[in-house]
Image (tube, rainbow over all chains, first blue to last red; front, side, top):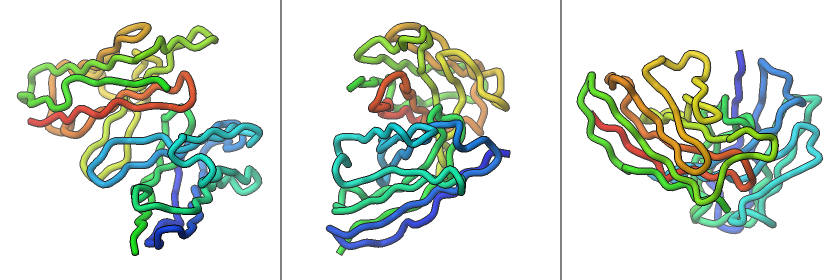
Length: 114
Length: 111
């Protein structure tokens, strides 16, 4: 059974940093590209970042480019999102998912507020 | 970036009756490999998104056959043949043909 479990969310002040993790199981993690998608309270889905299976290629939405860094540790079946210079508009539930969108985690809430 | 436009944004439906959601993309979603990476997701209240349909018309594992997808190029449709109470939620189209991936605004299905 495929499982994706996000962690690392919480309350952070504007300008602060946070590192999200996504532990994957039930599939050959290193074979698949992965993505992060976020959803602000009461809003729709917004793609944030993506990474290839080998971690050789990364992609970012313009809204987070230069502030967020996606990475993965294939030896530990874990996906990461390092977020810095956080803004109030980054407040959202952050989901990790397989690149094709076929499996999603439950999400972790990030709140940026003073 | 590819802009995805869904209509309607809200759809009151009657149990047992059909429902249809349209999604139009600002550019062709045909990939260089010949596939069209247009998916439909369902998000029930308080839940993460769930894949219903991939590559326009392929039902994902465990998805009831009352859900169907169709379309080509830039024009796509999700149909529910007979709406059930568990279908309440927000439906999104999503393109994964090119980065940045983009979503439609979402269509709220209400009984």
